[in-house]
Amino acid sequence: IFLLIPGVQIAGVALLALPVRANIPLGAAMTFLSMPATTPFILAASVYVGNTMLGLHADVARFQTLISSGAGFSEWSAWLLSDAAPAMLFGLFVISVMSAAIGYVVSAWFWRWRIGSKWRRRSKAHAAGGSEY
Image (cartoon, rainbow, N blue to C red; front, side, top):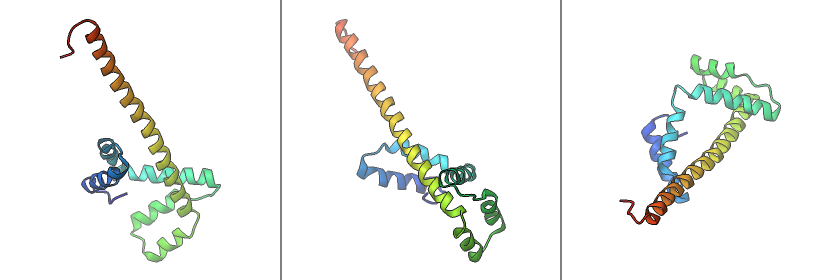
């Protein structure tokens, strides 16, 4: 996550998407999912996924307490050495990979459908002897 500032995230997505020829507008739109209002839900889901897949027993409430109390370095270090950090990181990894795969399939399907409908419309117009335009 490139800071939680939408403009910075969009620029980061654009720069990372160019070398792999990714869909920049879709990537830019998806940056609005990780805004401050949704971040706690994403983190809670990642801890749940990490707990389930790794068999850990991390507590989401502890993470929320650290954030709200302005915890210091020693408290965060203790949290990192507990079950919560691996559960959260693994959960974030799984959620991001699955979201990316689903997003890729959906956008590829939508693009193929859209191009196919244009070709069918163009073919019908040509068969009727008219012009599409």
